[in-house]
Amino acid sequence: MKDLSDEQIKLIEKNGWIIFGTADKNNQPHCVIVLPSKIEKQRIILSNIQMKTSIKNLEENNKCCINVYSQEDDTQIKINGYATIEDSSKLYTEIKEYEEINNLPPKLKVNSIIIVNIQSIEVSQG
Image (cartoon, rainbow, N blue to C red; front, side, top):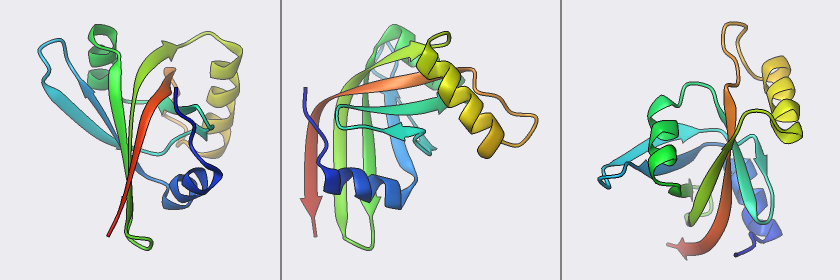
């Protein structure tokens, strides 16, 4: 398992949006752009609001990747890992309540959370 540095965490938080990639059992790729709910040194947590294809893919193949690009710093961070899906843990409840109160329109809800456990990190600049 690999740790994000404090600088990498700050860059991801500052950038906001990330590209989250999954693949189905036949290795067909699928990407979505999402805002992470929580960023930690060894994992990134995403809220599943309308991520049906991503969830289906992760149920078949839990390998995933995250890509972040900061135009300001001309830096790209590529994260590979594996994901777990939770819909009943204490962490899920905390994220769900926070997102639904602070960030989501009234008709949307957090169905589950995706916890991306980081296995490798590649950083490139310029």
